[in-house]
Image 1 (cartoon, rainbow, N blue to C red):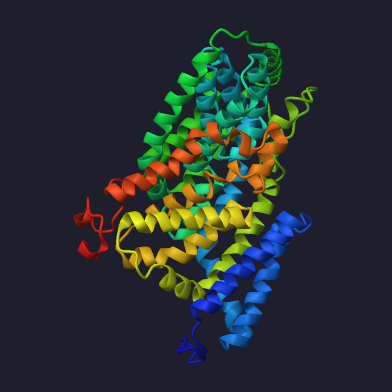
Image 2 (image 1 turned 90 degrees about the vertical axis):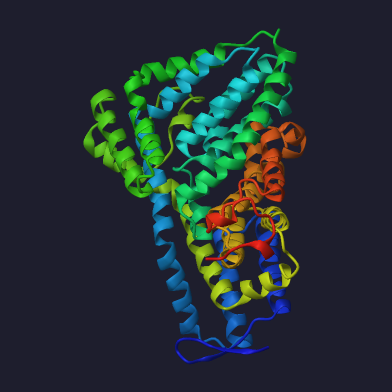
Length: 483
């Protein structure tokens, strides 16, 4: 091992590639055993154990002092504060928009477009819009998804096809929504701007989405003559209409957020404005009190409609609902900071990327690394943190914008996660929809087309986000101009 001197003049040993690989395997092993095998240890608990072991190894092998490691984690949390605040804002958005009738109105009007002939493409759009507006793929699968499963079965559509349509739409909205924890967490992990990340995602997601929409439309024609069971639709719409004022004005908070996002207004203030708009509409149109609106930001929206089917759809949101995700992100940031500042990530990247000389090959490595991380760790969030930390400095050196890294990490880490039933997302889909990701994978067109289209475009030099615009269209790093 070589030696390096930090700002406090303490001499530390440099991490080797072998030690870094051992650290990575340790992380994967702990997560796999605790979360996937034993299934009795939570992700935050595993992260605490991992952080403790990384600190111990860094002290013994690299000669770090414990106080130095605490400072490293504190600095990482400081740098990630902006991103962590998004989790609070996301909980507020969901609670506010439930209470204001914004989300209920989306579901109510969305169910009007369902018919046998267009069930699959219409369902894809409905799930996409719901996830885009609420910022949650899990919430979409567990609400609108359940309704669509029942409708699909009533029309004789095979369960795996309906499930694939739901998951495709939910993953799209989750990945693209400015109020979702996915783009916010992946942007934070990669050190990229949120709106730059979403813009980069649109470049590759749009063609993949169009292809998927067409495929679902063609597939849907096979079931055009089926009869639909309207009982579930009628129950849902009836309960929503009885408990909410669903006039089009209640959609205003969503429109405000989309407008501010389009204008590239700072994301946190945009979300705060959208929350405030939802609270105003809740008071004016839904008869809520100001105190209830404020409390819902913490505890979430709570309502008893008398329907065991509809209540779980509506009761959600608030800060408390985000604390598990918040704790995962908080601890993962500490872990990422240790891996980065102690030199483990740099040693890994140097060993992995020595012979990478094209944008396409680098994209392939990041996509595969993100996919393997999610498959191994069982959690896309950890894949975001780990891969964002590993590759962000390498993207800087090669003149690539970090928003492209964020896009690749989310494509490899998120889109394929529900297809693997041993991941948290896949397990949720299995328990909620009643079908394994391995069964609906052949029909989950968008989930595998998204990374595939992205990879093809990278090899062709299309959609590559350079820091220097003079590099536009270039595919080899030997030819680039680095600012």
